[in-house]
Length: 488
Image (tube, rainbow, N blue to C red; front, side, top):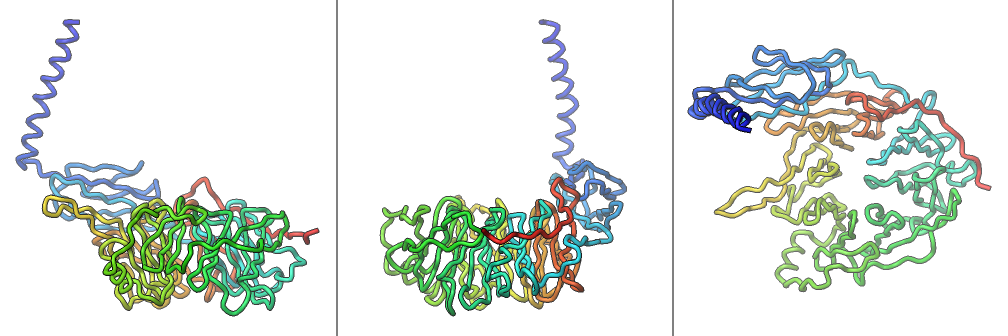
């Protein structure tokens, strides 16, 4: 035991004698080294910096670098190359992560041979795409995990030959609302969680002015019809048939008109007649009944902020933070500053990053990112500023879709018929690259899970897949179109 004590004592004495002078010298500034943390994709990439050549595995930490602006040159076999400038500061760690080298050349792959399509609609957050054709079965469902493409409707359905006007979707939902050019039926709910898909004809969606329809979130078994500020909860009726009617009757949510409505994972949200946010359970029962009625000045302030002409979609970010996206493009938040964009700026679309408070927003000519707010100390306390918009892409022509890529370090933009990949590094001029063109007027789909972009090629309108991130366990096999037999 005494011998062990002596060994440990000498170990600590030697460690102190060696480390203490080094710490003192470093603290006094005699060692002017810096630190960089590097993370690069693909894994086989190599980085040249300050006379060193570094290889994976990544991430990697480099120390004792000169405190100056350094050039980091990144390259990988079968990929492109890039050079990034990084500023090294003594005593601080500089992070240079999520560097992405694309395959070179970028070669798309035809997923469904010998078949052309007119439009593609993503069901984001799922493995499903909806594809429309001008001849034959007009609507097909494609599962990129299974490599299966099947007509949505039975061959004897009266909707089968009806042209598709447009398709509405909700992120993370396997259902979509398909609007047909049909005399009798306007819109139908298509549920791709079943095989074959279940199509529910909704009588209320017929006519010249159909109600707005919302679904997803906490209520997978129901959807909501919004008309003139009234919200009704309509129930789905599953008889096992491929095409079925929605159950007659619906439940009115709330006793008065709403100025906004939205769904989260655990609650429903409504913006009531006095522009106050109300929380409800999945059945529409109020949860915050004990809250005092707003004062007249609060109601007037909210009225001036929201206006009286728009109905707002409520987008929950977390339990306390919400976005409000108006049907005319107004974007607001319930934190300061309430107005995220200028009064005359109309937002065309918004997409939240998974498990994050970040969001992509876009209008026809520019795209921006909304980051998480950073708490800042203010007069001895903590001031929690609201989110602000940083525009990273301007002078666009007709931005129609956007996606986060590579854990949010990049963004995919569909501008007109061009698909662009744009870097989102703060404080750096955004580097952008055109990676492909799509069929005129068609859309795109991107899966972060597989790192793959899906699109209709500009020449023929065939479904193509283009891998942007390294190989994962999730692959897209070649697909064949199956036929659904008529319902008995």
